[in-house]
Length: 152
Image (tube, rainbow, N blue to C red; front, side, top):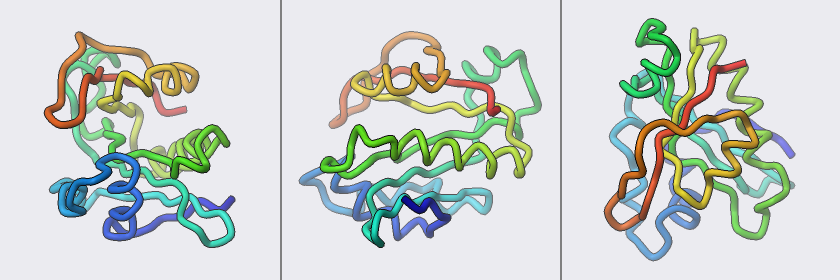
C-alpha cells in the first residue's frame, strides 16, 4: 500500500462512494478543501485509490479545552476519511493516520479532532481518540460525536 498527498478533487469520487452514496458528488466538495493549510491523503493499492482522508487547520472548542488550551493554530480537523468497502478492515485508515501524524507534526499540529460517526467510534478509540461532549445529529448522515487525541 502506498499513502501519498493528493489534491482535494482526487478525493471526491471515493468520498462520495463511501460517505455519501447515492448523493451528487458536489456534496463532498467541502468548503474547507480550499483552505491554504488543507491537505489530503490517498491510500493506493496497485494504483487503485482505496482510502482517503482530509485535514484542516481548524479549531474546535471542546478539543481545545480537553487538550488544555494549546494555541488554536495547533488544532487540526480530520474529515472525509473512508476506505473502499471491499478494502475495509485491512488497516488502511490506521496507515493513513500514521502517515498523517508526520505531516501534522511538521505543520505544527499537536491536537487532532474529528466529528466521528457513531459506527466509527471503536475504530477511533483503538487509535487513542477520546469522545468529547454529547452525541449530535448531522442531517442526512446520522449521529456523531466529537473525538480528539494528541498528535504523537
